[in-house]
Amino acid sequence: MEPTVSFFSGFTPNDLLFLGEAALRTLWISVLSISIGTVLGVAFGWILFEGKWAAALTIAPVLDIFRSVPLIIQLVLFYNFAPIIGLNFGPFASGVVILTVYTAALVANVARGGIEAVDTPMRRAARSLGMSYWQDLRHVVLPIGGRAVFPAWVGVALGVMKDSALVSVLGYVELLKASQILMTRTQEPFLILSIAGAFYFALSYPISRYAAFLEKRWIQ
Image (cartoon, rainbow, N blue to C red; front, side, top):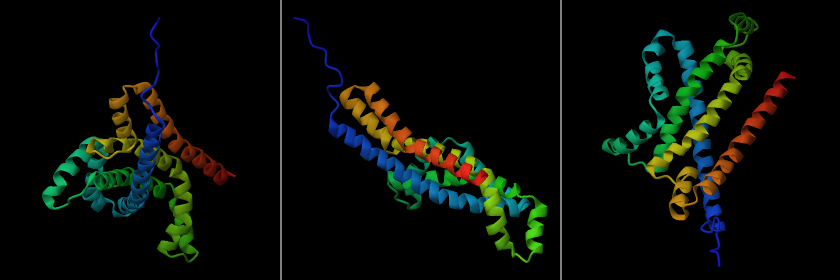
């Protein structure tokens, strides 16, 4: 009698639930980092635009470092050296800090580009109508510049969501780390990575589709 071949026998419904919980952790750390990083990035972008030479000598080099150094190196360095200065952050907090700063560094240039996308004559016209500087930013620069750079920001957000997988090197059990744990136990990499990829797709695709929907509404 020929031996029976059993496929995926080591994978259970509890493992699927484990991956689902890890996907929620991925979503949570991504939402926190992208939200806070976007706010900081817009502020840094405004400083880069208004500060000119002063910003180029101070903030710009720091942002360039975070954009240039591989994210995994930033995560490992911060997690290991933060305790030396009294910051006893766990894997989640360390991941949020680095992903936030990394997002802010990327968004800063996007935000500066959005401000530069608004023509100077248009801003002068707004000021001539009696708008204050901050009203000009809120009612003219933000709507026009935001539309111009919105696709770039969506790209940054989706990239950071995928890069959040690197937090697994710190021991935070997000989707990639959970996949590695299950692959070690079940020895079924194809199935587990396929499910993990489906979860990443389920997290990213609605964002890209909703972004496309918003772009269409703005164009009309």
